[in-house]
Image 1 (cartoon, each protein chain N blue to C red):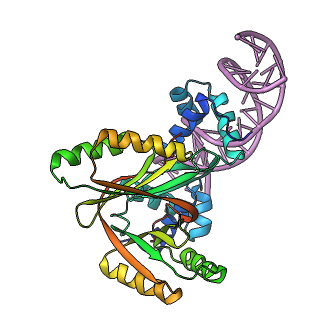
Image 2: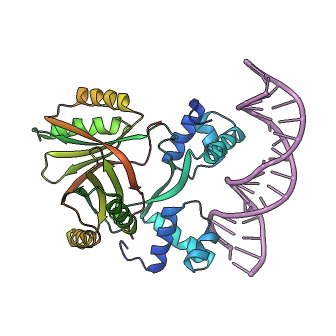
Amino acid sequence: MQSNFDDFDRRILAELQKDATLTADQLSERVGLSRNACWRRMKILEDAGVIRKRVALLDPVKAGCPLTAIVNIRTNQHDSDWMTRFQAAVRSMPEITGAYRMTGDLDYVLRVRVADMAGYDAFYKCLIGKVAVSDISASFVMEEIKDSTALPI
Amino acid sequence: MQSNFDDFDRRILAELQKDATLTADQLSERVGLSRNACWRRMKILEDAGVIRKRVALLDPVKAGCPLTAIVNIRTNQHDSDWMTRFQAAVRSMPEITGAYRMTGDLDYVLRVRVADMAGYDAFYKCLIGKVAVSDISASFVMEEIKDSTALPI
DNA sequence: TATGAAAAACCACGATG
DNA sequence: CATCGTGGTTTTTCATA
């Protein structure tokens, strides 16, 4: 099954990544298939897990999280116990909207959303209270040029 | 009207950030309000732009973009012409799913989604063909510990 | 293409605090 | 007097036959 989409699938996915409220009817216009064909393909893509879910995206400013930080973390202990605790900490903190273990095995990058600098400070204290890190440094986003959930398909 | 949510609004937003397909009925169960009260608040939050849109999220592996790169870019020219061209380049490249100008005014961070290393190489060549950068370095994501679109509310 | 069931998209009234 | 809940209506979409 996996990854053999045709152009129709790709167009369906592209549209739904922009707007998941489209009805099968509206989709069919944009994609160039009948309503039912669209609906069937959509269902297949959902059942196959290509479409993971549909979510609402909020305005960060209006939702009260206008400040984004990119946090670089380095550890010197790469035992599995530390990693488990780190993962648990990451999952428990909703301010962390992205957490990536990078090539090199010692480096992590976080994307953190907070209200302001005070919010970041509180986050920082909370984090280092949960796990030990040998080095941590944050940069702050001055301007969000692009922030998309759409994968290139 | 801006940012005075009460707990009900927050719970509605939290639920819709997890699953935007919930009906007003289902929402009402989880939030503890009547169907119509939920619907009314949802509409207000939409009209106010707190809810920006609803989108489908794809599985990166199944959609054929399993490799994520974090790209650090430095420039020495901060004239507005360079910035305009850089922004245009960023917007024109769908592989770039995030682009942030960081504190310091010379540094940019990109999040890039590609199929594999060959895909990254093609992306890299394309990017440097469009804008001049004085320094560019990529790290690759070994493990995605968390990747969420939900803001902490 | 047709169709029954469901949900969306509203409106209106009376109650509540 | 905002906002709740209840209970309606009409229209649209779903999900299949």
